[in-house]
Every structure is written in C-alpha cells, then in structure tokens.
Image: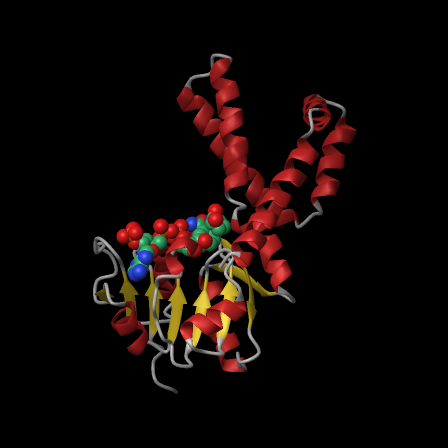
Length: 264
Ligand SMILES: NC(=O)C1=CN([C@@H]2O[C@H](COP(=O)(O)OP(=O)(O)OC[C@H]3O[C@@H](n4cnc5c(N)ncnc54)[C@H](OP(=O)(O)O)[C@@H]3O)[C@@H](O)[C@H]2O)C=CC1
Ligand SMILES: O=C(O)[C@@H]1CCC=N1
C-alpha cells in the first residue's frame, strides 16, 4: 500500500469546499490528519484533527492533491504554486489552460459538482488536462464518487453546458418549490402544510424517478394520457411557456460559464 493520500482544499471553509471535505472524510478517502483546509476570514469550527490555515501555499506544500474551491472572482489574486501536483478545480468558468498556467502544473482537472454534495448526492462532470495520468483519474473519481456520482466528459464545452444543467441544477427544483409554495399560501393553505406538501413532492418524485429509471418524457406522457388533473396542469404550464423558460434558463447559464472563461 502506498503512503496515505494528503489532500488540501483551498476555500475549505466555504459551502462546497466544506461539503467535499465532509464527503471525502466520511468515505475514508483521506484521514483527518492528512486533510488541510484554507480559509480567508474566520476559521470554521469543523473537521477536528485536520489542519486549518490562511496560507494556501502552505496547504499546497503539505498536500498531494489540491482542490481549489474559492469563488471565481477570488481566484486571480490567489497565488498558489502547485509545482506539478494534481490540482482539481470546482470553480465555474475557469478553463484548464488558465488553471495550469496559474498554478504551475500540467496536471489539472476542471470539475463542476453541485450543492447536493452536502448530502452526498452531487452529480459531478469533470475533464482532465493531457498531463493527468491514470492514478490522478482514479483520485478524481474517488473524490466525486464520495460526493455522489461523477462522469468524465469529452470537452470543456460539455463542462460549460453542464455547469448550468447540473451545477446550478439544485436551484431549479428550489425555484419550482418556491413558486408552488407561494401559490399554495396565496390560496389559503398554511405555510407549514404547504412546505411539508412541497418537500414531500420533491423528495418523493426524486426517489421515484431514480427507482424507475424511466425516460422523463415517458413519465410526462403517461400523466398526460391519464387525462386528469395532472394533464390539465402540464398542458397549462406548457402553454404558459414552461419548456421555453427551461431552455432559456439553461442557455443563460451556459453562456455565463463561457463568458467567465473568456474573462478569466
Ligand atoms: N455552491 C455551489 O452550489 C457550487 C459552487 N461551485 C463553485 O465552487 C466554488 C466555491 O463556491 P462556494 O463554496 O459556493 O462559495 P463560498 O463563498 O461558500 O466559499 C468560498 C470560500 O473561499 C474562501 N476564500 C476566498 N478567498 C480565499 C483565499 N485566498 N484563501 C482561502 N480561502 C479563501 C472564502 O472565505 P471567506 O468566506 O472568508 O470569504 C469562502 O469560505 C466557486 O468557484 C463556485 O463556482 C461549483 C458548483 C456548485
Ligand atoms: O452559481 C454559480 O455560479 C455556482 C456554479 C454552479 C452552481 N453554483
């Protein structure tokens, strides 16, 4: 067996960095003493036994793998020389070429998890640079399997598109849930009941969807074919522009990711 893996998470005090840290610790991919996390302002009281620092270069020096999880706007001023080590970025928009140049390594991975990493249910597409080897790939898979599911994809264009589809994805059911809740409350349903009803719909339909493995079009058609209340709702939502709203939203996220890459 080789030496235990040492992992550092720059921005480990943040939302996604903290979720990844919790997932890889839970999965036993890294031991607490081999995990380093950097923060900027206030040290979070999490991950006892791990190494917290404000010095991200120190973190990089004591790690084999460096995960970069700061907001894209905070990345340019982040001067960290990885010296050829594996760098895994979870940042939206930042391209492989820029990552390699900025961190002085040809072993870089661009990935895009989502907020469900917090409950071990992220979906994470990723792509590696030419310098990434088979062992690096195995580390990336293990890292994002610990957070949910992952796929290596064919191009950075795929990452830009999936940044909207799955990276931003958890926001879309939240948007639907919010609209449903507000409608329910406006019709006199108590907020408590509305919240419980909407939460049950989201969680229950997610589980159902996962279990059946059906194509969503088939499910929708089955409901439409029933010719009841659900068909009435689906047809009214579609007439009101549901499909176009989703298409335009995904296009806006895709474009934003490309624009962020052009300006980084
Ligand atoms: N949240 C999400 O759902 C997803 C996020 N992402 C990507 O993940 C990245 C992180 O996002 P998220 O976790 O939401 O953001 P957060 O703001 O929650 O976390 C970023 C963290 O980075 C810290 N930070 C900033 N600069 C430095 C620095 N120089 N050294 C050490 N720490 C620093 C911040 O500290 P401080 O609070 O003190 O400023 C903060 O805790 C982003 O690039 C985003 O694009 C990708 C997919 C999904
Ligand atoms: O909204 C964002 O920019 C980040 C990236 C994908 C999800 N959250």
